[in-house]
Image 1 (cartoon, protein in one colour):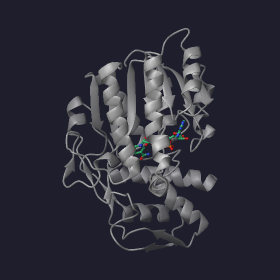
Image 2 (cartoon, rainbow, N blue to C red):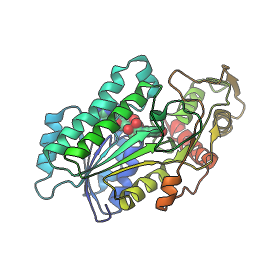
Image 3 (cartoon, rainbow, N blue to C red):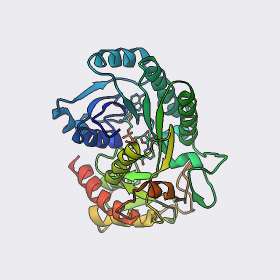
Image 4 (cartoon, rainbow, N blue to C red):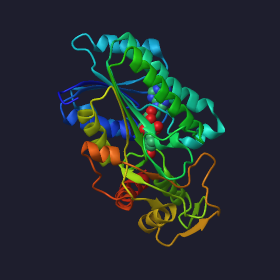
Length: 324
Ligand SMILES: NC(=O)c1ccc[n+]([C@@H]2O[C@H](COP(=O)([O-])OP(=O)(O)OC[C@H]3O[C@@H](n4cnc5c(N)ncnc54)[C@H](O)[C@@H]3O)[C@@H](O)[C@H]2O)c1
């Protein structure tokens, strides 16, 4: 992946996809991005759209005929060498109340994109997977543990996607990178705990209701080091199947820390009301700790702790939410 590459990016107008595109363009890549705008925002691509090496199309990943036509038209001068697949339902709670959301947005987008890669002989795939595939697992989560039993439909459909990608590697793909992200935070967020808290406080500036007792704790990673790690892995991990946790080593943040940081930044006199219990919502994994030993061995370490990532993201997200 070191040479300037020609990339197809699904979920291009979303939070992580748009940041990834900025960095791909900065290293000289040519990028065709698409998104059905379910959660994506054109504003996220404002900078990228000024670059002549970037093209964006509003399109659904499950419309195989349309995606295939576009890829054929855009491959005339030079074929695509990699697809970055980020299109998915990123709202885990939506998939708890309606499992079809994750079947369609999370699994079928992968299954259908694989058909396009096969048809157009695009040899490499980089896939945004998740810590949610591990479910509730005692001890530190590393890439080789199993069997895996996710507790959300989202996690189940990501795990199924990993399986479909592995099978595709056996028959037509040449190389894949599976990234198991932790919770990612930063500017352009379309969802997530900081975004939710900021939206709630905007509506009721005197009180912030927090699900659970605030003790839920997870590793959070800022989107800037996440993208850095994704590119580092694509440049340096050269097995046919490369699967990596990306995260903050030995560093977590509690929901209480996040709630207090958002209140402090946005509405310092607001009271925080905890609903009680140590679980936020059905499908939420309340505590986990992530091993990134494999990634460290490859040569990449995060430069920020989880709380530093939260502090930076609170500043960015609250500013965006207040702007409107
Ligand atoms: N943000 C996190 O903390 C996190 C953690 C683990 C994994 N991930 C994964 O990273 C990827 C990006 O997540 P994000 O946080 O940027 O979420 P996001 O919702 O901002 O981005 C996903 C994008 O995919 C688009 N999309 C959904 N269904 C589509 C379809 N059928 N066709 C075309 N586009 C479609 C959405 O409109 C959205 O813009 C997702 O695959 C997500 O599951 C994110």
